[in-house]
Length: 103
Image 1: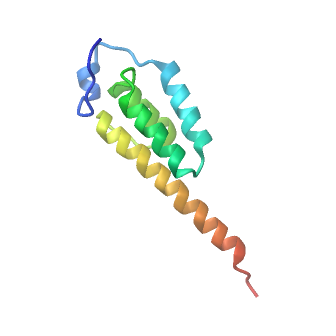
Image 2: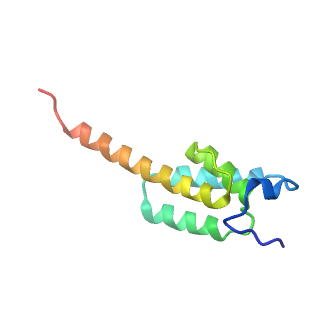
C-alpha cells in the first residue's frame, strides 16, 4: 500500500481518484461531533492516521466540512481544525448573546 504523507499535494495524486465514501463518512462524523473538543480531537487523530485518507480525500473533506481550499493534506487538516475552532467560537458567542437582554 502506498504511504501517504501530510505534505503530499493534490498534484502528486493526479493518477488516483478520490474515494468519495471515505470523504462522506468523515464529513458526516465531523458534523456529528458538534462542539465536543475531545470527540473532534479523536476523530482528527483517526483521520490523520487513516492510510485511506490521502491528499485528495483530505482536501475534499476540508472543502465539504471547512469550506476552505487546500492543496496539501497538511493544509486540509489545518483548515478542518480552524473550521472547528470557528464553530466553537460562534456557538459560544450565540450563547452569550442569548443571555444578554436589551432593555
